[in-house]
Structure formats: structure tokens, C-alpha cells
Image (cartoon, rainbow, N blue to C red; front, side, top):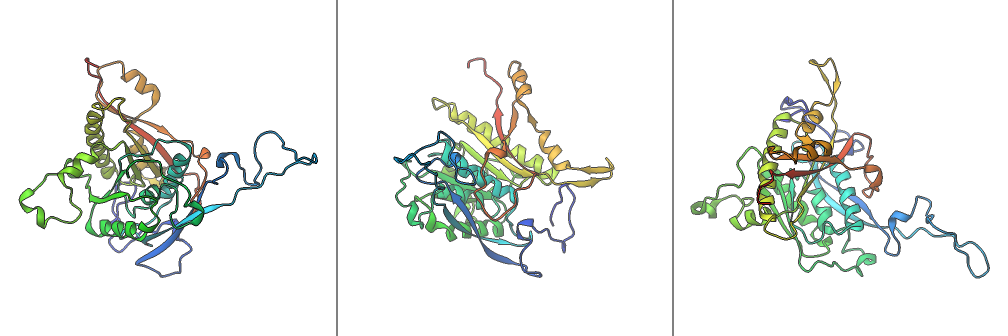
Length: 357
């Protein structure tokens, strides 16, 4: 059963198709492998200084004869990923929010050091597309033009892809394997089950460990993931029940992670970047077309002004959210139209301040 954005269920024979695949052959269904290409910033110049025409912002440069030197657009570099998915939604599909999030992470990788050498956790990974882009670190090992680049991290970070259901997790693991040759470094990637409706941390049945499913957690992995400083989620807001379960799980993860991070000085930043698409439906209650799932999502967040007020009293812990300006994020992934209904939010968990701090 597929849940609709207002929390209802589609009939078992009905399936949802991503607009990413509207150009596919009619009548096609079942798993397929699609190629997704993303562009990389130029090696010899700052990509933010180049416009569509290749012009460079700054002073005009003249050659020895006094002629204007016309700046040339650097040679485009690109990488290609193979993603196994379903055209319809019986197993994970590729949605626009996931592609926008990939644009965002590629931009961050090449404009800051925020994502270097960290432990990351993706919630509701689906196909695993975003984290596979993240693992490649924006550099394609199979492209000769990129092989001179050196990853500066002393050791490969840990990356956890999580979702629920053996079929989904198995497909995610296959995608990691399909793209393992383009990983710039030997990443430690774990595909694990994390059902938001179950408790966290998961209970460990040590007596029956040998017969447990292949996507179960070990105690050491649970400890590692509680040190994650980056959490990621894309296109997980479409059902009110799941949204509630998602934020309960997020609170457990970020509250335990925050306690662990206080043992390190300076404390590690812990943040969730969430990409979502506003989905509109006609509401009988409102007699209007509304994005109920989006409204429910926003109800869990405080804005910066509310955060400043609440930090000065003995309030309960809360989430503070800030939207990312997507006009400042270049589109790197080629195979989609970004549209106007996709957003990325930066979400942090603010704990109750202790008198001793």
C-alpha cells in the first residue's frame, strides 16, 4: 500500500510514478538501471565565478598587444552514476527532492570543508542516490581528468544508508555495489534497517545474532552512528503518521548524538539537511488545494526568532529549521527540472540548557 500526502492509502493496484521518468517507454514497469550524470566544478578556476557564457567577473584583462583577453569557460567535467530503481513506487524510485539534495551536497563539498571526514546517516535512503553522490566526494575515480585530485581526509568517513524492508535495503546495497568503482576513496558504507516506528537504539538479540537479517545493526555500529554529525533525508514527508514517526526518531538520534558531542571540544555540529517537495491535494476540510503534508512538517519546527526566545527559558528541547536559498545552489545533476516546489531545510535540535553549562 502506498500512502498519499494526506495520510490516506492508495489501493494496492494503484502505483505512483516519479515525474523524473515521464520520458520512459509506455507500459514499462519493474526494476531498471538508469544513468544519472552530474557536473563537477572546473579544476583551474572557481566555478562560482563562471556564468553560462563563460565570462569571469572582475577587471578586464589585456594581452601584450592591448587586445582584450576573452576568458574561456573551463572544460566541463562530469561523472555518471548507475541507479537501480523502479519506474513505479513498488520499490524505491528517484524523486526530484533527492536530486536537488545531491546538487546541494556537491556545492557544499566544493565551497566548504563542512562535510570532510564526518560520520553521516541518511534516513529513508530509498535508492541511496544522494549518499552515493556524497561518497564519491564529488570526484569520479574513473575520469582521467580527476585523478590528480587528492582527498585530504586522513581516513575514510563512515556512511550509513537506512530504510526499512529487505527489498528496499537490498536494492540500496546493489546501488552501492554498482557504483563502487567510482568511489574516490575506500568508504565504509553500511546499509542498515531503521524503521521509524520502532524504538531506537534497536534491541540486540545476542543469542540469535547469527540468524539475524543481514541489515541488522551491531552494537559498535549503533555507537558509531550516535556520533554522526550529518543527518540527511529526502522526500520523506508525504504521510502525517510517518512525519510524526520521523521526528520522534530524529529526536532520539539527535538528542543522544548531542550528548556524545558534548564530550568533544569544540562540540561537533549536528545538523539534518532535509529536501522535500510540496505536494498539493484538494482538501474537503478546507475546500481548497493545500499542501497538508508540508504544513504538518512545519508544525514541528521553530524559526530563528522563536528559538531566541525559547533559549532564555526552561523550555523543552525543540527543532529549529531554516530554509536554504536554492537560487544559490547550481544545478549539477542534469536529468531533471528543478521546479518551484522543492525545498531544502537545515534542521538542528536545541536541547534544554543545563545550569552547569
